[in-house]
Image (tube, rainbow, N blue to C red; front, side):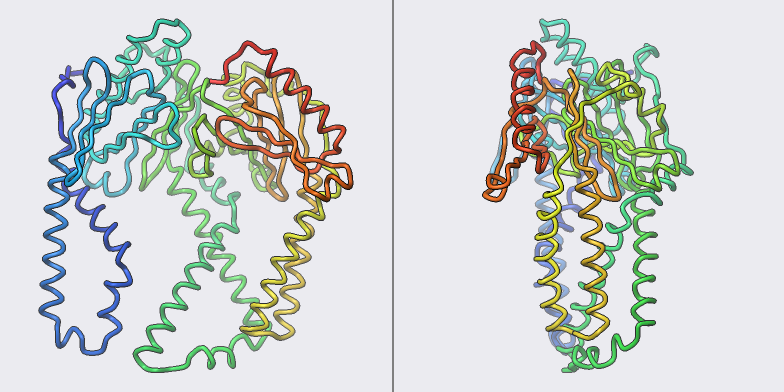
Length: 508
């Protein structure tokens, strides 16, 4: 591997000019989409003012390219003795310094455009930040790997504590490593298993995306046609569709099938060629077809270890794991590191490495949520159904909508019963296990010493009927166990506070 002098301020890859230009241009188009769409709704506008419109578009594109080029030239970074330095900005210049000891993770990412331009994105996550503090859009892959290795090396030099030094070594790197004992591939997702993951994923997500798309398309077409041709298509639509139960059935089946295909395809694209490489006690995760992602699961930073399953996953003998790491903000679903298609053996190996415990032999004292929790879900569903009923009455109300709303309410009530049945918390001397879900089942595992705070929450009804919610705060967010008996919640609270205060382990 060639040695690079990183103390010299450097620019991004030359292809970064085009990447910055195209991403900035797309951003401007999204921000001004309604203004840009105005000419298409005006009759004869292009015929009368076409030359000026085209000239204006060309001028704006040229100005955007000049701005992007200046942004590229002003974006310079280097590694000095004290920190990673970054200068950026066109009109307002900014200087950022990241001390080496603050670096937590270094991630490489590559979306479709970056793959076409043969560059990678470089992100540095720091202590106290919920997202990457440094984002470099375009670096040559070999250069990015060497920059990552150099930052890890500099961080390692300033460590005085042996355990801290070992933790730095586990940041992970795409750089070459001659010591094969430090890296071992735990798991690689084959295409057959990937398809199984897609089939067993959340169907309703794909259906929701389709419904949102069709709703947007419907509104766009209606607005366009009514303005151009002065037609009242909405009234005509009410009078004709839906008239028969057959049409509704075909429509629902079509949306479900398309939703299923959308779910499978999005899962395949997202987790394509998933690899999990063990680097001593930590794991480096790579996946993605159109957007390639490289992330590191650090043992010390892991706060919540979540296992998800459902009947289809169980039939395929696979599990999905989502890891939430320490952050200054509530970790969103998008920020969790997903490991899908894991076998039981892979799951046990990963769990043991992160917690030094045998997953197969775990035993917990279980405390179940009370049946009154059902009413909390029932009232929420009731409010939702009232809103949908009002909307159905205004738009189109007949026996079909009544039957549909009744079936929906029944389905939501059954899901609420399943949620109550599955809701519980389990404790042993080291771990907290929290189970939730309806059709999908989610097990969240938290090491007791990583709790930030424990408290009880009681609304007016809970105070009256002797129940409470147990609220657990971690460095990656809040987890709530709903509707426990008040006495049991107090006992759990006291036990957890005692365990946290008596431990000598650090939370990170």
